[in-house]
Image (cartoon, rainbow, N blue to C red; front, side, top):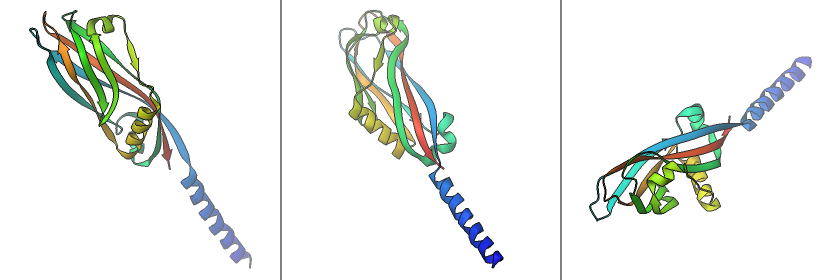
Length: 175
């Protein structure tokens, strides 16, 4: 009888421990930074178009070993800024968009890139609908494509710069 009780107790503990491991959740923080290199040639009176992209991959950084176990993603902050400007300081982006896959996250209107770099202007994405779409995209996909497109006007000469996108995430990992 003692053996039967011991076996039942052991079986119960084994099943309970397995259930506890299934319930175990980890919260992992990760900061993702991607840079898009932009090169605008001299436009000579006509706007030039650009369409550039980079891929953000969750299989890098702190998420790499957990990517297949992510059950939720929370975006803590999402910003972008223009950096490393060289060239025509009067050059502008009359219109542009920043997208993650098909989700438009930001628009650019009449931006003097040189001034934005010198002022260290940071553009914050805070639209709850956009953030929610991106969080769902990161749960359902291991990567997303950032696209920067639009028009540029740089009559006095070329301009080169980078757009730096920073996303601070917390992922819920179910073990």
